[in-house]
Image 1 (spheres, rainbow, N blue to C red):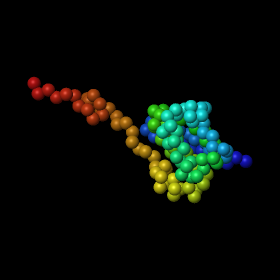
Image 2 (image 1 turned 180 degrees about the vertical axis):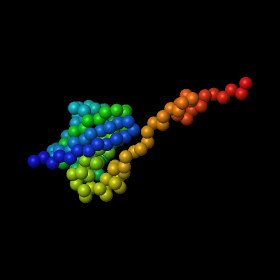
Image 3 (image 1 turned 60 degrees about the vertical axis):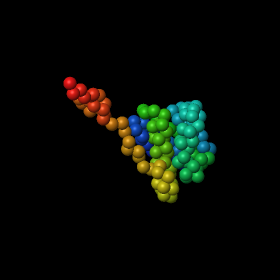
Image 4 (image 1 turned 120 degrees about the vertical axis):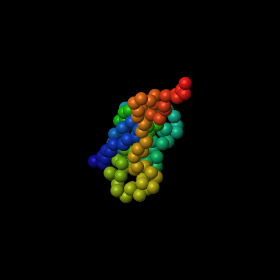
Length: 129
């Protein structure tokens, strides 16, 4: 019987749903292999950080569905969801995942545009005359 745990992670406007199953370490994102979805090596390395912290890189097969945001936001959402799913499968991982900062949701979002201004913080140019 394969152990299954699932979790949701968020970063900026990206939302990721991750499922962990006992397996050989295969990672599938939106139906594509990790290397095909994230072609940059830095992004690929960032995705597997929760598995490395938990010493489980070859223990679980990871399936992720991610929507919204850009590539970096999607990587952050997948990392957050994967850490939460690992925590659901083994409560002993709370301290190492917390120490690595993987369980904290990054609250930084784009600031909204304000009315009567061209942007969130920008003001229209002042003309004295």
